[in-house]
Image (cartoon, rainbow, N blue to C red; front, side, top):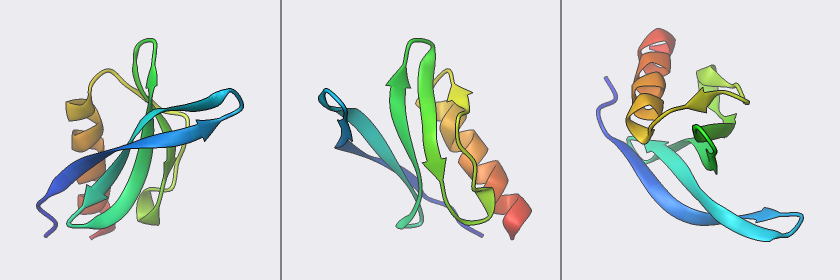
Length: 75
């Protein structure tokens, strides 16, 4: 069962330059990219069995819980 969720701070390209973003890893496997939004974190994309985009998470902890839930459903 996957156990470690980690966030790596990166810069994501935009039309106007770049913005801070977070790559989300589950046991060292890239699962998603989040970018800041007015109300939290916007899911730019996710990979694997949880392929989705456009969700808003109020906190990184909420995004982590979502990643863990998707991983347990896919297992």
